[in-house]
Image (cartoon, rainbow, N blue to C red; front, top):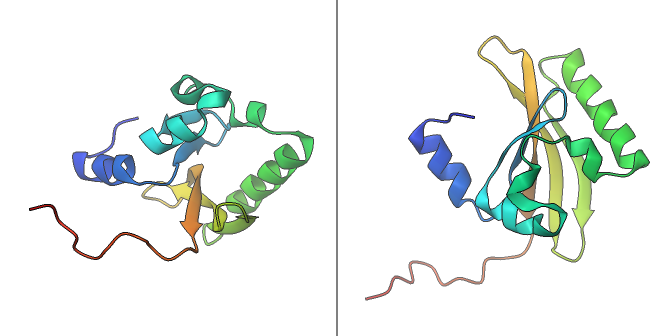
Amino acid sequence: MELSPYFKSIVEQDRCAVVVCDTKHEIIYMNPAAKTRYEKSGGGALVGKSLLACHGPKSKELIEKVLAWFSADRDNNLVYTYFNEKENKDVYMVALRDEEGRLIGYYEKHEFRSRETMKMYDLPN
């Protein structure tokens, strides 16, 4: 997958896992955080494999349902899928579309609810 250097840098420096799939559920990209997060399942070796292989029957059914909803209308682009209590974060499936609005894939978006613990502008001298 080729991204402009700017977008690639944004995604690769994100602390949250980013896994991008095409409409056939093939994993086409994982950022470094995703490779680390899913290391026990294969990490970067998952690229090129089906995301569905990493899920149970109920999850597969829900993923397929969301993809069908994304396909039904170009305004259908975001679904809240899960709250991870242990990590205090919300998880979403987000549609990816081309310039004409056609569905080309999807990715999983993580949003933490916890307040940042890093000090603001705490730069080393």
